Length: 172
Image (cartoon, rainbow, N blue to C red; front, side, top):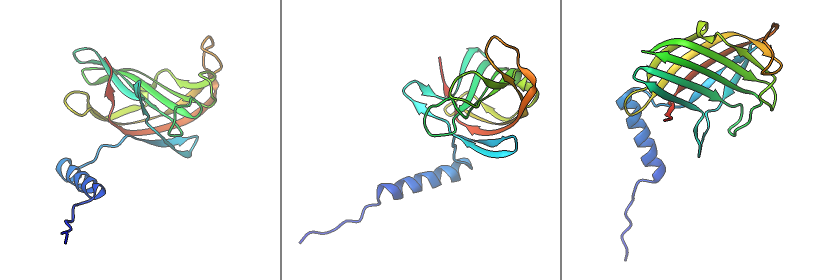
């Protein structure tokens, strides 16, 4: 006669580990990017692939970082419907930023705010240590850019709000 031993399932173990993480740290880190485009609610996805993550940062020198928060409308890489906020930090302060929205399956035309630092607020910036984390919000008007060789058309704009709570990967 065999004796059955009851072992916790992998799912139960994962839920317990996740619960422990939430209790220990107060929050579980997730790559969440949401907001609105011209007032219409949107959800975007951070992607992870062989070439890295679409949310990343590089340290150019101590205290000097470049950061990219790029997210997609679907759970696969595609240009159409994606958003990108790139910025430079010096000792934790935003010194330069650009926000972009790509309405088509090509890089141009797109909408851009080349002075996005005015609408970008960072609540949490942790780029050192074991787990990097960024929490922030961008809100602004993006101007239509027909091609990379033309200036943005300030008479054709979209309103973009992006809120993010992300764990960027380090790129060196």
